[in-house]
Length: 362
Image 1 (cartoon, helix red, strand yellow):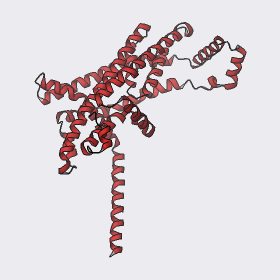
Image 2 (cartoon, one colour):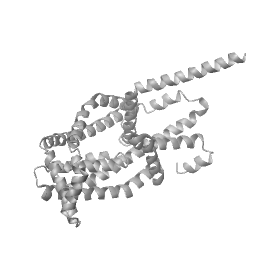
Image 3 (tube, rainbow, N blue to C red):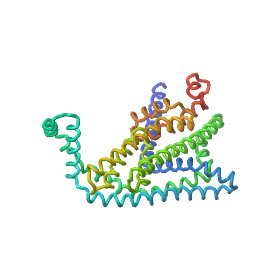
Image 4 (spheres, rainbow, N blue to C red):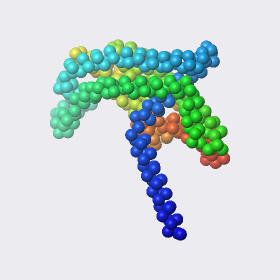
């Protein structure tokens, strides 16, 4: 009798393991679909305030409000693309003229002049360059190769874009569609808590994404004004692109700043490196520094703490931990996922002392 119970237990355990493996394999195979659903969910959260405004203030019916919202979102998207295309074409033409050897010579010259300015002998500086071979071993061709790879990847978004827009339309039109899908797996005694959790999460995440776009808009304005003062061509497009990259916490500002410096440099190819390009790079660096100071000490703490009702230090630690565990993707999704977890904990474990302390602002 005992052997039969043990055998049944082993078979049950094996069946559970096989089922879990099959589910994970299935999710792996449809990962692109899951990605489309997640992006569509983000778009629906961003568009939700617009739909509510059109329905309540302008008295649109639900379908018309959703169609108008999708048209606004699509219009903004293609407006952005139409701005970026001329910049990409121009940068492609500039890269065709880029002299890698001359670029290396200019950077080595700047290095020597900096060493001389700091009262280090020229002989020692040249000897240090020759001994270290740091500058000669740098692969400067990575600059055009990176941009070429970026351009070639743009064409693969067309099918995904249409799929995302289609899913987002129905998420906005049938706002309870996602909720109803989840409720089918929830026991009856947990339905009320689950409904409250979903409603609260939707509200907080809508505020978070609206706040995120407000943060990027502030950066865009600062970048645009700074680049226009310096006299950079395509200032608006460059400012928008670099502000958008800032969506990646902590790494985004570094990538966006490097990209801005690169675009400023290639926009002035053919000009004197020492008299024109170098001063503009210096002033661009000042603009980037000023914008990041405003963003880090004013925009981010105020917007994020207000939108997701979490302390700025709390958000900082969560982003760092998520980045260490899951890389760049973890840093991007850290705040939304953490917010959702806090809401769920508050609804289902509200009596726990630690949960009470952690979710007291919700």
